[in-house]
Structures are given as C-alpha cells and as structure tokens.
Length: 142
Image (cartoon, rainbow, N blue to C red):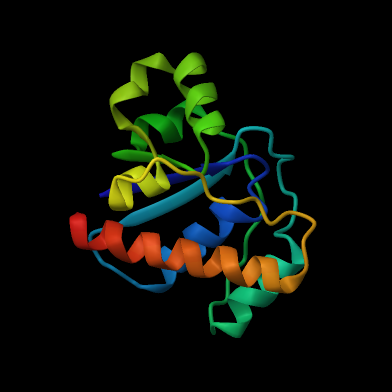
C-alpha cells in the first residue's frame, strides 16, 4: 500500500505525517509526502522536527513538490485540507478516485488539519497528536 501525504509546503503537516507512519515500520505500507507549493529541498520546520524528536522519531526530510510520477505510484493521495484536495482534483483529475482528506479517510469527518506553520511548539504538538490519531485509524482501515 502506497500512501502520499500532501499539504502546502511539505515542511510541517505532510512531513510529520510521513515521519509518523514511517516510524511505525509497517512492512506492507510505503509512504511519501509533498507540498503543492513546496520549495524543493526546503528543510522541515524546526518545531515539527522538535516535536518528532520528542517522540523519538528521527526523520531526515527535505521538501518536495507534488509530481505526476508519485501521484501515479500512490494508492491513496491524502491531503490535509479541502483546498489541497480541490487543487489536486483540478490539476490531476485522472487521480480523483485516490484523492481524499486525512480526516475523511480516517473517520469520515469533513474537517481539515490545522496548519501549525509559524506557531509555537505547543501548536505543533497538537498537530502531531491530531496526525498520530488519524494515522492510527487509517492503519486499522487498510
């Protein structure tokens, strides 16, 4: 199963989601992440990295932009917001059957993952916890 997490810049939410899932070492799941407006090779947000390290998750991450080859590779393209989903649907309608928001996939809820960018470490901890819970629910589904 190939999961592709998508957010805006690939330095906070999607990067943390990738790291959380990768740290679980599930043999039949591969994971990647990207950003719709990512600056290629940008480092992970310092607070995202700090929160992951607090959870003993070490991740060597650099941002990447969404690309067609990885969209094709993915079984599920998991966005953080409705805006991300809509942008991908408009640009890549051929992948519409694979594009879903994180919370819709995890619980069926129609809600976005808050963007912690620019927030303090506590905001990043809340986002980490939200991502962790949703990813646990997705793992149980697949």
